[in-house]
Image (cartoon, each protein chain N blue to C red):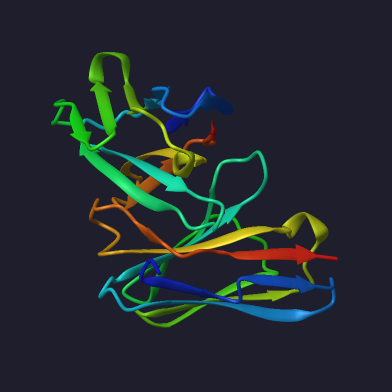
Length: 114
Length: 117
């Protein structure tokens, strides 16, 4: 258990489905992140939230919609995804976005779009 | 622009051998941080080490050691007497500031290490 919990661990969804990924941390961190990890590619930063405010949207398609109701919870709402969106989605948190103490990552959600 | 290069895609070693994972970075900032993370098959990235740009001392932690060479922009990671449990993907990362003043972390593509019993 890393301190950052992601659910579900695995998700298979059709292209017309709507689903949500959940991330939760109780480390007292104020910044939370969504990363996408595809095979043979570097980790791609998708979204950053600092004190519940979105501070970065890395040109992510609108079929991915993040939500951060408080500093401990982060969601990624998915709808009308494409097969190329299949990947490992990792959530991370840090003390704050303007610190450099490294991230704590969750175990990820392995998403397969069929 | 920030960039992290891990030229070794996959490495296989026999148990008890030493292995070095290479990391070369690019940044225009004078203040930055470098990290190594380990990603076991379970998926999460596990933080191993953080080093700031002003501290060029090498660090040793058990069987792990890190060699930071600012002159060559490298931050290499050595595992001594490797074990099967060391099998994982290892990521090098660079943290500096983006144009908005926020921390920006750039990851390398990772090196998959397989330790053969």
